[in-house]
Structures are given as structure tokens and as C-alpha cells.
Length: 419
Image 1 (cartoon, helix red, strand yellow):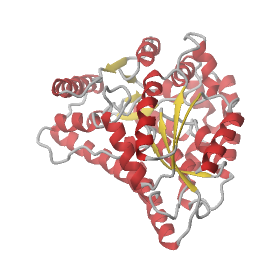
Image 2 (image 1 turned 45 degrees about the vertical axis):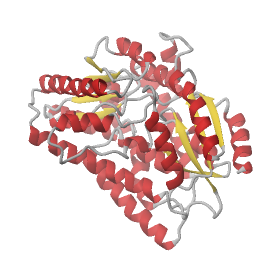
Image 3 (image 1 turned 60 degrees about the vertical axis):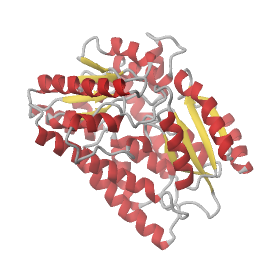
């Protein structure tokens, strides 16, 4: 990625430390993805993007900024992309999935903080993530106490807007969330200088829905007995979708889905017949956190579905394009996300029951990042649900470090063998 050095320098990045990150990433990509056999040809696009993840898309974002467009860095799937797109803004994810950034976060945060938060803060303060450097505004949300306080640090020298997500789903909470989205829309209009009209909002809803439908097409291919794509590749596709242009993302996902459907018809599978089908649930898996999927799929299992914010949660619900009250339709869609911040979180349990059946799941693995209290507490109810359904279940707590890979491999290998 040497072609981007001048761009990184202009962004004020720490080039020496960033070089260390760039040296590690290609090895990780090679070990996790390129060692797989019989991969779909369509994965070439995502291989290219991840190989230059701090170059290709950042360069595009900077070119769009030169045209007057604003870039909004987001942390969570609760932030309504439609509102930003309707004002001609651009949405991008932010760095936070690598152990590389954790020490930088620990320099200012308690070590007991979740690794995702520590990595995000470390990536920003350490000046080694171009997306943090490019974003004109960060958009946070109140899905986690640790994140709420970390936003105070992240917002010291970049405008920070925080959306207050309801913690319950009563009628008054739904109305409050609609008002919160309306307030966010006004802020986006003010920040971009562009009015959000009904026509522009409808078009933005259509664009984002098409992206979700394309992602869902790829996901649905994994329901087949013939598994045409690995869980690792599906995860990479989903992670990159948070950074990519939504129109291009839909095009590339549909192209991949076309290939996968042909593979299914031709009986082309990436795993031997009888491979145990695993559903992964729990906390988000931010790029480049591929640890658990890689261990499962090198221990004899296949990840056919992941029910979390970096998985099917982000793609399975659409905004009603025919609704007369557009903001209500957007609010209703986002409150269908079964986040552990909700109490009670019935949606997640309903979602899991349906996914287990549709994806023909043999076992469920819950992975929770250390110190993630909300998801950690919910393991009690998830375990009870799966016991009731008669589905084997394993709960794991981990972080971004590789030190526990041997132990996780042993435990997961034994779990898959028992299936």
C-alpha cells in the first residue's frame, strides 16, 4: 500500500506505527482467507479491498470531500444510513477490531473496558486509522455505557453527535426514537448544508434496502445443504459492507450471489458433506476480527450464520418503502434490531429460533467480548432458550489477542466433535 503514503501523511497519521500494522495485515489475510480451497471467484473483489483497506476507500472518500460532501463515521447499526445519504452525505465504519490498537486505548481507559472500545479509542488517538482521520463527524449512540463515555474522548477535536437509543420498546419509546431520528436529520441538514426532502429520503431508503437485499441474498445461499461459501468469506463481505459505497456494495454482493446460486445448483460446496453447521451469536465482530470464525472452520465446523451486529442483523430488515410516515417507518425498522441493550430483548430470541431452523443449525456458539456486560448477562436467557430447543450451545468469552487461540481451538474442536 505504498502508493498511499502521501495521502496518509496529509491525514496526519503516524506513518511509523501504521507501517507496523500494514506489515501484519497481509499475513493475517493470507492465513485466514487465502489458504482456503475452492473459494468463489466473486471473493476477488473483497480480497482486493481488504488488501488495501486503508487505501482504496479512504482515497475515494477524500475525493468526494473535495466535491463538498461530508463523511460521517459511525459505530453502530442503529445509526440510520438513510438520513445521511438523503443529505448527500457518506457513511463509513470506523476502525476497532484489532489487538494492535488496544494498548493505545488502555493508555487512557480502564483495562477492564471492552476491547472494541479500547481498540476504537487507540486507533483514533494513535493516528493509525485513516477513517477516523477522514470523518467530518462521528455519530455515536447509547447502546453501551463504555461507548458513551469513550465518545467524550473521541469527540474532543471532531464533531460528535450521539443518538439516544431507547432501552425499551414501549409505545412512548418508539415515538421518542422517531423524534430522535428527526433531530438527527436536522443536524445532518445543518452540517451538510443540504435539505433532506421526501424524494431524497425515499431514494436513500431504496438504495440502502437494495444493499440489504443483496447482502441477504448471499446469506440465504448458506441455508443450502451444499454450502457454496465459507463463514470466513461471508464475514469479510459483511465487514467491508460497513465501509463501502452502498450502490457498489449491492452490485458486488448480487454478483457474488449469482455465482453462489450457480454453485448450489451444481453441487459445489466449500466443505465436505456432513460438516457440522454452526451459528455464531453474541457481540459484534469488527474488521479484522476473524479469530472465532477461523478457529471454528479449521476445527471441523462451518459457520453458516452469524446473528450479531456484523452479521445478519444488519441485513434482514427493510424500511417500508410504501409507508406514508417515512420517519416512523425508519424508526420501526431500526428498533427491530435485537440488540442486548433492549430490555426485554425478545427480538433476539425470536430471531435465533427462526435462524436455527432456516439455516439447519447443528450447534450454536456465543462469543462475547470481555467486559461486554449486556451480552454477557444475556447468555443466561440464550442458554435457556437453546436448552428448550434441544440445540447444543457453547458460550465463550474472549478478546482480540491471540493468546487464547489454542484453548479456544481445543474447546471448539471438542464441541464440534460431540455434535
